Length: 246
Image (tube, rainbow, N blue to C red; front, side, top):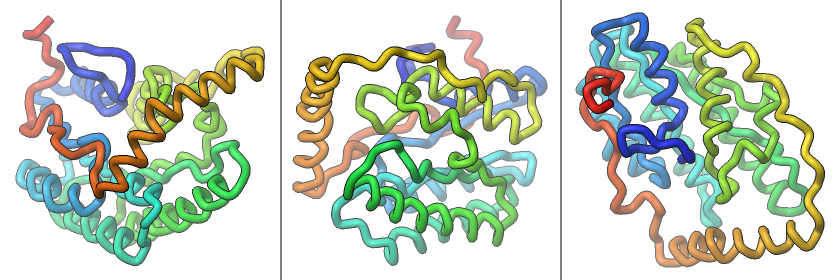
Protein backbone atom coordinates (compact mmCIF):
# COMPACT_ATOMS: atom_id res chain seq x y z
CA UNK A 1 0.00 0.00 0.00
CA UNK A 2 1.51 3.32 -1.01
CA UNK A 3 0.59 6.67 -2.51
CA UNK A 4 2.29 6.47 -5.89
CA UNK A 5 0.42 4.94 -8.80
CA UNK A 6 1.63 3.81 -12.19
CA UNK A 7 -0.32 1.96 -14.87
CA UNK A 8 -3.37 2.37 -12.62
CA UNK A 9 -1.75 0.31 -9.85
CA UNK A 10 -0.19 1.21 -6.52
CA UNK A 11 3.56 0.65 -6.67
CA UNK A 12 5.04 -1.23 -3.75
CA UNK A 13 8.63 -2.11 -2.99
CA UNK A 14 8.50 -5.27 -5.14
CA UNK A 15 7.54 -3.28 -8.25
CA UNK A 16 10.47 -0.95 -7.61
CA UNK A 17 12.90 -3.86 -7.23
CA UNK A 18 11.53 -5.33 -10.45
CA UNK A 19 12.28 -2.04 -12.22
CA UNK A 20 15.97 -2.42 -11.42
CA UNK A 21 16.14 -6.15 -12.16
CA UNK A 22 14.56 -5.59 -15.57
CA UNK A 23 17.21 -3.04 -16.59
CA UNK A 24 19.89 -5.71 -16.77
CA UNK A 25 17.78 -8.51 -18.26
CA UNK A 26 15.73 -8.07 -21.40
CA UNK A 27 13.96 -11.38 -20.72
CA UNK A 28 12.96 -10.43 -17.19
CA UNK A 29 9.42 -11.36 -16.15
CA UNK A 30 7.56 -10.49 -13.00
CA UNK A 31 4.55 -11.80 -11.12
CA UNK A 32 3.03 -10.30 -7.99
CA UNK A 33 0.57 -12.56 -6.20
CA UNK A 34 0.47 -10.60 -2.95
CA UNK A 35 -2.90 -9.53 -1.57
CA UNK A 36 -3.01 -7.09 1.34
CA UNK A 37 -4.82 -8.47 4.39
CA UNK A 38 -4.58 -12.18 3.60
CA UNK A 39 -4.02 -14.61 6.46
CA UNK A 40 -1.27 -17.21 6.27
CA UNK A 41 -3.62 -20.14 5.63
CA UNK A 42 -5.14 -18.20 2.73
CA UNK A 43 -1.71 -17.49 1.29
CA UNK A 44 -0.80 -21.15 1.62
CA UNK A 45 -4.00 -22.34 -0.06
CA UNK A 46 -4.33 -19.69 -2.75
CA UNK A 47 -0.86 -18.50 -3.70
CA UNK A 48 1.85 -21.10 -3.15
CA UNK A 49 0.80 -23.49 -5.93
CA UNK A 50 0.27 -20.56 -8.29
CA UNK A 51 3.78 -19.34 -7.51
CA UNK A 52 5.58 -22.69 -7.74
CA UNK A 53 3.92 -23.40 -11.09
CA UNK A 54 5.86 -20.46 -12.53
CA UNK A 55 9.24 -21.15 -10.95
CA UNK A 56 12.02 -22.15 -13.32
CA UNK A 57 14.82 -22.87 -10.87
CA UNK A 58 17.28 -20.83 -8.83
CA UNK A 59 17.20 -18.01 -11.38
CA UNK A 60 13.67 -17.33 -10.08
CA UNK A 61 13.57 -15.07 -7.05
CA UNK A 62 10.55 -15.47 -4.78
CA UNK A 63 9.90 -12.97 -1.99
CA UNK A 64 7.65 -14.35 0.73
CA UNK A 65 6.06 -12.55 3.63
CA UNK A 66 2.92 -13.81 5.37
CA UNK A 67 1.62 -14.29 8.88
CA UNK A 68 1.85 -10.74 10.21
CA UNK A 69 -1.89 -10.28 9.72
CA UNK A 70 -2.44 -13.37 11.85
CA UNK A 71 -0.07 -12.20 14.57
CA UNK A 72 -1.91 -8.93 15.22
CA UNK A 73 -5.29 -10.63 15.57
CA UNK A 74 -6.73 -10.98 19.09
CA UNK A 75 -7.20 -14.74 18.76
CA UNK A 76 -3.73 -15.43 17.34
CA UNK A 77 -2.45 -18.97 17.89
CA UNK A 78 1.28 -19.29 17.24
CA UNK A 79 1.08 -23.09 17.30
CA UNK A 80 -1.19 -22.94 14.24
CA UNK A 81 0.26 -20.04 12.28
CA UNK A 82 4.00 -20.63 12.54
CA UNK A 83 3.95 -24.21 11.19
CA UNK A 84 1.84 -23.02 8.24
CA UNK A 85 4.38 -20.31 7.53
CA UNK A 86 7.23 -22.83 7.65
CA UNK A 87 5.35 -25.22 5.38
CA UNK A 88 4.88 -22.49 2.79
CA UNK A 89 8.57 -21.58 2.86
CA UNK A 90 9.64 -25.20 2.51
CA UNK A 91 7.35 -25.67 -0.49
CA UNK A 92 8.75 -22.60 -2.18
CA UNK A 93 12.34 -23.65 -1.50
CA UNK A 94 11.67 -27.19 -2.73
CA UNK A 95 10.80 -25.72 -6.14
CA UNK A 96 14.44 -24.70 -6.58
CA UNK A 97 13.77 -20.96 -6.41
CA UNK A 98 15.89 -18.48 -4.52
CA UNK A 99 13.71 -17.37 -1.61
CA UNK A 100 13.90 -14.12 0.35
CA UNK A 101 12.09 -13.80 3.70
CA UNK A 102 11.39 -10.84 5.96
CA UNK A 103 11.36 -10.31 9.69
CA UNK A 104 9.00 -7.78 11.29
CA UNK A 105 9.92 -4.76 13.39
CA UNK A 106 9.58 -5.82 17.03
CA UNK A 107 9.88 -2.45 18.77
CA UNK A 108 7.52 0.18 17.39
CA UNK A 109 8.32 3.01 19.77
CA UNK A 110 4.96 2.62 21.50
CA UNK A 111 4.60 1.72 25.16
CA UNK A 112 2.08 -0.16 27.23
CA UNK A 113 0.47 -3.57 27.16
CA UNK A 114 -0.21 -3.64 23.41
CA UNK A 115 3.41 -2.74 22.63
CA UNK A 116 4.66 -5.49 24.92
CA UNK A 117 2.33 -8.03 23.33
CA UNK A 118 3.44 -6.89 19.85
CA UNK A 119 7.10 -7.37 20.77
CA UNK A 120 6.51 -10.79 22.32
CA UNK A 121 4.51 -12.09 19.39
CA UNK A 122 6.77 -10.77 16.67
CA UNK A 123 9.95 -11.84 18.45
CA UNK A 124 8.61 -15.39 18.31
CA UNK A 125 7.45 -14.89 14.72
CA UNK A 126 10.91 -13.65 13.71
CA UNK A 127 12.64 -16.57 15.37
CA UNK A 128 10.51 -18.87 13.26
CA UNK A 129 11.37 -16.91 10.10
CA UNK A 130 15.08 -17.19 10.84
CA UNK A 131 14.89 -20.88 11.72
CA UNK A 132 13.08 -22.01 8.58
CA UNK A 133 15.12 -19.58 6.50
CA UNK A 134 18.33 -21.14 7.77
CA UNK A 135 16.90 -24.61 7.19
CA UNK A 136 16.16 -24.01 3.49
CA UNK A 137 18.99 -21.58 2.73
CA UNK A 138 16.76 -18.55 2.17
CA UNK A 139 17.90 -14.93 2.14
CA UNK A 140 16.60 -13.10 5.21
CA UNK A 141 15.94 -9.36 5.25
CA UNK A 142 16.23 -8.21 8.86
CA UNK A 143 13.99 -5.25 9.67
CA UNK A 144 15.20 -4.85 13.25
CA UNK A 145 18.80 -4.14 12.30
CA UNK A 146 17.94 -0.92 10.46
CA UNK A 147 17.19 2.12 12.62
CA UNK A 148 15.50 4.01 9.77
CA UNK A 149 12.59 1.56 9.73
CA UNK A 150 11.60 2.63 13.23
CA UNK A 151 10.50 6.02 11.91
CA UNK A 152 6.69 6.08 11.90
CA UNK A 153 6.77 8.56 9.03
CA UNK A 154 7.46 5.59 6.75
CA UNK A 155 3.94 4.35 7.43
CA UNK A 156 0.66 5.24 5.77
CA UNK A 157 -2.16 6.80 7.75
CA UNK A 158 -3.39 3.34 8.74
CA UNK A 159 -0.17 2.91 10.80
CA UNK A 160 0.38 -0.59 9.42
CA UNK A 161 1.39 -0.35 5.77
CA UNK A 162 4.28 1.52 4.23
CA UNK A 163 3.75 4.81 2.42
CA UNK A 164 5.64 5.89 -0.70
CA UNK A 165 8.80 6.77 1.22
CA UNK A 166 8.67 3.53 3.17
CA UNK A 167 8.15 1.43 0.06
CA UNK A 168 11.17 3.03 -1.57
CA UNK A 169 13.37 2.52 1.51
CA UNK A 170 12.46 -1.17 1.63
CA UNK A 171 13.09 -1.52 -2.10
CA UNK A 172 16.57 -0.04 -1.72
CA UNK A 173 17.30 -2.33 1.23
CA UNK A 174 16.28 -5.39 -0.78
CA UNK A 175 18.32 -4.28 -3.78
CA UNK A 176 21.38 -3.96 -1.54
CA UNK A 177 20.83 -7.46 -0.14
CA UNK A 178 20.55 -8.80 -3.69
CA UNK A 179 23.74 -6.94 -4.69
CA UNK A 180 21.92 -4.92 -7.33
CA UNK A 181 22.20 -1.15 -7.94
CA UNK A 182 20.62 0.75 -5.06
CA UNK A 183 20.52 4.19 -3.51
CA UNK A 184 23.18 4.17 -0.74
CA UNK A 185 21.34 6.99 1.02
CA UNK A 186 18.39 4.80 1.99
CA UNK A 187 19.65 4.47 5.57
CA UNK A 188 19.73 8.23 6.07
CA UNK A 189 17.21 9.37 8.70
CA UNK A 190 14.31 11.51 7.58
CA UNK A 191 14.72 15.23 8.31
CA UNK A 192 13.86 16.28 11.83
CA UNK A 193 10.26 17.41 12.21
CA UNK A 194 8.84 19.53 15.01
CA UNK A 195 6.42 17.59 17.22
CA UNK A 196 2.80 18.41 16.46
CA UNK A 197 0.67 20.06 19.14
CA UNK A 198 -1.18 17.68 21.44
CA UNK A 199 -4.59 18.76 20.13
CA UNK A 200 -3.50 17.87 16.58
CA UNK A 201 -2.14 14.50 17.68
CA UNK A 202 -5.37 13.77 19.52
CA UNK A 203 -7.49 14.68 16.50
CA UNK A 204 -5.36 12.53 14.17
CA UNK A 205 -5.60 9.58 16.56
CA UNK A 206 -9.37 9.91 16.77
CA UNK A 207 -9.59 10.06 12.98
CA UNK A 208 -7.34 7.00 12.68
CA UNK A 209 -9.43 5.12 15.24
CA UNK A 210 -12.73 5.76 13.44
CA UNK A 211 -11.27 5.25 9.95
CA UNK A 212 -9.14 2.15 10.52
CA UNK A 213 -9.29 0.70 14.05
CA UNK A 214 -13.06 0.43 14.38
CA UNK A 215 -13.57 -1.16 10.93
CA UNK A 216 -10.68 -3.53 11.70
CA UNK A 217 -12.31 -4.65 14.97
CA UNK A 218 -15.72 -5.01 13.29
CA UNK A 219 -14.29 -7.16 10.49
CA UNK A 220 -12.46 -9.42 12.90
CA UNK A 221 -15.49 -9.77 15.15
CA UNK A 222 -17.27 -11.24 12.13
CA UNK A 223 -14.33 -13.44 11.14
CA UNK A 224 -13.53 -11.31 8.10
CA UNK A 225 -10.23 -10.08 6.70
CA UNK A 226 -9.41 -6.97 4.67
CA UNK A 227 -8.00 -9.37 2.10
CA UNK A 228 -11.37 -10.99 1.45
CA UNK A 229 -12.54 -10.30 -2.09
CA UNK A 230 -9.25 -8.76 -3.18
CA UNK A 231 -7.17 -10.04 -6.07
CA UNK A 232 -3.47 -9.80 -6.80
CA UNK A 233 -1.96 -7.45 -9.38
CA UNK A 234 -0.04 -9.79 -11.66
CA UNK A 235 -1.00 -13.47 -11.15
CA UNK A 236 0.95 -14.59 -14.22
CA UNK A 237 4.52 -13.50 -14.90
CA UNK A 238 4.62 -10.65 -17.42
CA UNK A 239 7.42 -8.86 -19.20
CA UNK A 240 8.48 -5.91 -17.11
CA UNK A 241 8.40 -2.95 -17.10
CA UNK A 242 5.07 -2.31 -18.81
CA UNK A 243 6.52 0.14 -21.28
CA UNK A 244 3.73 -0.48 -23.75
CA UNK A 245 1.31 1.18 -21.32
CA UNK A 246 3.26 4.48 -21.08
